[in-house]
Amino acid sequence: MTIYSQHANRGKTQILATYQGPDGVASKTVTSLGDSRLAAPIVDALNRISAFATVPVSVHDRRERRVDYYPRKHLAALTDAAARADLLSGAHSLWYEYVCLRLHQALADLENALGTVPDTVSRAVHSELEVVQSELRAAIDDFSGTSSGPETENERHWEFGHPFVKYDDGMDTLSDETREQLDRREAGFTTEEREKAVADLRVLVTAHSRCTGMWATLDDPSREIFAEPYDSDGFYMTVQAPEPDNDNGSWEIEIGRWEPDDPDEEYGEHSSATGNTVISCALPAAPDADGIAHLLKSVDEKPLLLAQWAETPVGGALVGTTVMVAKRHDS
Image (cartoon, rainbow, N blue to C red; front, side, top):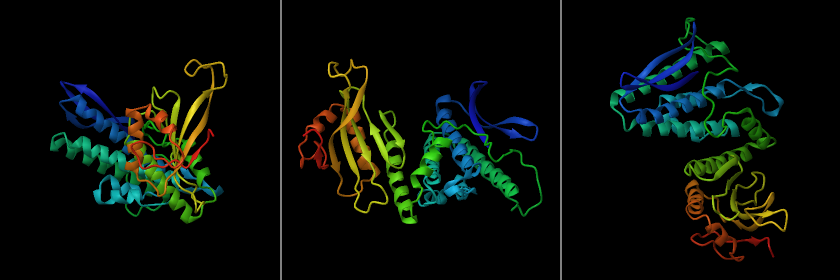
């Protein structure tokens, strides 16, 4: 519904809210700051909040060959701090709960950014969130025919299927591809299996978010983190959640290495390579986000630790951890 930006004006930095109004695109000043460096994280968080709040109510839920709507309960968290815990407790669908988690993180980032600015700025930003929530709710009520009050024209227009937001959060969270990928992932899940998959997704996504700037990717938010730090001599690590329908499944950590497809080529000078698993570790209990983040940070700080771990025999623990090797794939 709203896109945020910052602009220099008379020695200060303005935070602007831009939206579709009755007469076209319009902008208004949310607040002003004396330091552009303080404005940047606020603008970033506001854009993510706007997108994560708006997109779920602007697209159809097409799981199981039906056409439905996603919940809007997440909108309460924009203005009610107590409601933010609810963003981490649902199990509606993998994609919706993924977006709720990202919204929770964006709101936390905003509060952190507001902790370094004057109270007047903080109050102005919170007032802006109240406007976004109020106008979005009113527009949805009008769209769904559930509005009980007199018909009024909102200052900010919202159109189903065409949310006016900045999509790029760096993770493709809101892309059709991500939504369809997660929909396929949960197809056929029972309610219990979906709840388990959502819980695993929260662990993986939270762990990944605590390792910004690393060579780690979240190709499947509900299944796996892939980490390949620079200067690791071709070694990489994956952290995998178990399949929700496998009662005997466990979390796994694998160390692998890229091997040149041409045996006459050296790694680093190869034209193509194939990844091969070297060791597998089955965790005795589900890890928490802090535990996974610790592993990721360890290999980011010491990339060649992966090579050292890859030498661990079956039954031995990876150096500096309690993770035991369950199988070697090179013997």
